[in-house]
Image 1 (cartoon, rainbow, N blue to C red):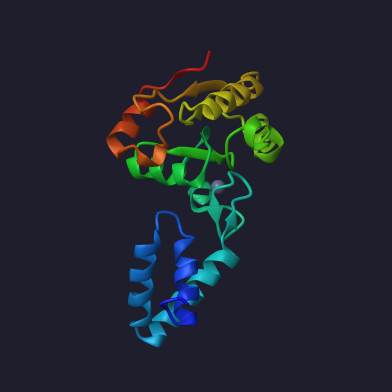
Image 2: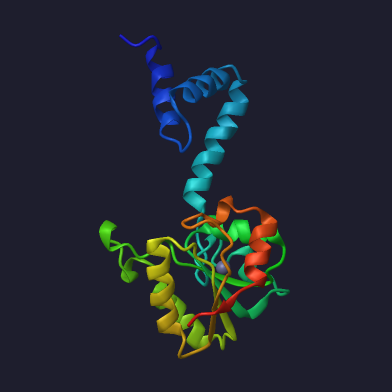
Length: 199
Ligand code: ZN
């Protein structure tokens, strides 16, 4: 017998599936939520569903977007001759926070990881190669953290696009395997500034 009444237990179960939420936090959040006004909860539930239904990927760079092109790709002030390649939309957000980078992005959607059965064909690598060939890109900056999968991906992508453009990678004063999103803005801005040609 659960100490929670069934609807409450269900809510806790769902909350517990969220990243970083353990049983205690899930219980605290659930008890908090059921005390909020019904109108607020209805708006919350609606926002959750709308985000899921409406947020897809930018057709050009694969960043999160609810339109064909994301806000960054539609911004006429961006430098369209530079593309920064990242693994995940969270990396775009981290790099945008530095306010240093003015080019466009390309989100791979993960890293090459044979152990997990993820090959280049599961990622947006081919779309990147097409983009670089078509968009007359002057520089591709690879901003992928130097884990084993990150290195494999960086080298693979680098080899494919080198015939078309200059390829650099950001300097990692970041810890090995450290995620971009956990790096502070100054570190990340410096990493970008200190980028080197991929050899
Ligand atoms: Zn985009």
